[in-house]
Length: 310
Image: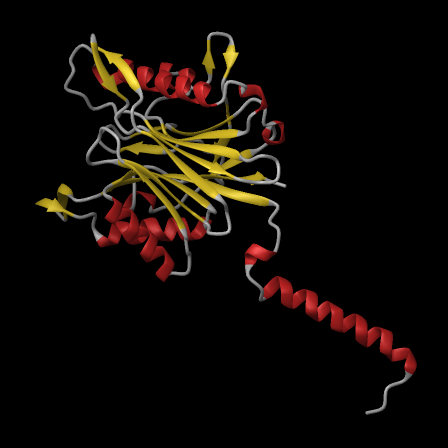
């Protein structure tokens, strides 16, 4: 068909639009600059091999049931975080299993880190998008003086440094001691969690003496309330401000992140805290991922934020 001269600019314009559309839809995502990085934190409830009750029967040395693992993956796949901080994962093999199963369902994490500290069963770990440049640092030995003796933060602290054009930022993944204890003089492990929070705080200050100029997040299961000594320890040292909590809620406005079935109680024990100098996050609101059947996978709900990263 013959073309008039007047139609050529329109045809060329449509051609360029097609090229642009192809670049955004077909080319690898790493080529297209993202405006945000989605960061999530999730306690995956005993993703390990242990003695457990399964369908009314006591099973020794039994893995996390497949039905529970499937629901965890469904939750993660709904959010699709670029960085996923995990608590209560078992061995490195368990982490690799989760990563492989997610990849088989279309969510590929090229990067991973797993920390073994002083808890031989439950660990903190992380998975991340391969387009990110991340270096992991393992803080295994965080000392505390507990009941007159030298001890350590049970699960240590995992630090990820994410490189970017502004000098990078860090994510600290934490899982403080649970309330279960055999120490009668410290009911609910309140004192121990406070000591663990202080040890983590001191290590962060040691890493970043110029706190006010740094960008970082502290994320994870802190096993205590927002006004507890443990959580406050991660926010201040004396008059010096260390971090500010990010507010989270689900689609209905509810703010709880954990359900304790034995007491039929709901609480907020999963957090993300931002560094005071990260001004771009002042108005940031986090999301608690809710599903009616969330308990099938974990007693915790996944929390996530979209960080505005230039």
